[in-house]
Image 1 (cartoon, rainbow, N blue to C red):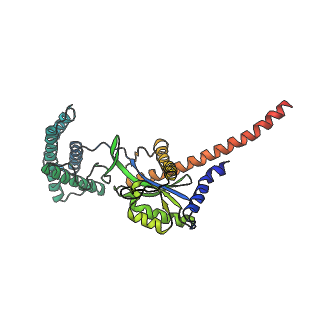
Image 2 (cartoon, rainbow, N blue to C red):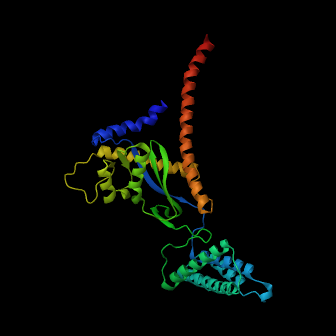
Image 3 (cartoon, rainbow, N blue to C red):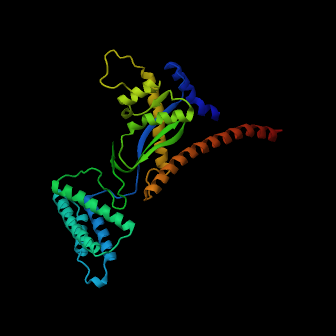
Length: 343
């Protein structure tokens, strides 16, 4: 019973193969992309600058030598008081936000100048401190540019001082139009999920469709007969490549609908129903496998967390299959035990 349920999509793929020419392709590959959100604070300009200012104050404390005389002024108490006054205000108007950002920019500029003076005297920083200082300098340049030009966007904007490799990923979904974390592509074949790509950049997932088809051919020895994906994957390059290799890329044709176009609506409905399987994998991975909120901090540990989430997702499928086998065996054994008890 379990084997039949696992191989059922292959029968549908064989029928689809016959329908689309029977060129040796078989199997269905479902692809989609999602974001694994990380546990970071929502990036606000004043909050980021305040965190950067606090980091520079710690760097100054470590760089200061009592033999040099008095410690340089940082106005840390006044800066902290100004930020608290802004953060505790209930209504943050655009004027208040701009005032708070300007204040933190001036405090941060003073601290960076003091750090440069200490470094000129021959003080040294550890590699981790030097990396953090470079991140703060980049953050200061970005915030200063946005403050002077009255804008709120800059390419490759830093959204976290401790994790500068994150970038905003615009998803356009209700409730979460922008997410902050790693972006990943997965492919689902016969219920098994495979991690195809992992990146901290907001890339276009459509460029990986041909690569995923080639990986499928390397694993199985042939191309899939069908690829079920979103509309974003149906660009001209992907359609041309799929047509060349005899792959049916599900979805409507590009451009405006043609007059008297005869489309198989029942097949389109079945393709869309089967494509939901990848959404189900995303939902299960985010609810049960730790992909919903990544709490690790380093790039390597985040990558391991995402990979382990996909692994656990596949292990849950094996667990469900074993549970069904045990249940089937118990159903076979239970009637015999009941008959022996009656006799």
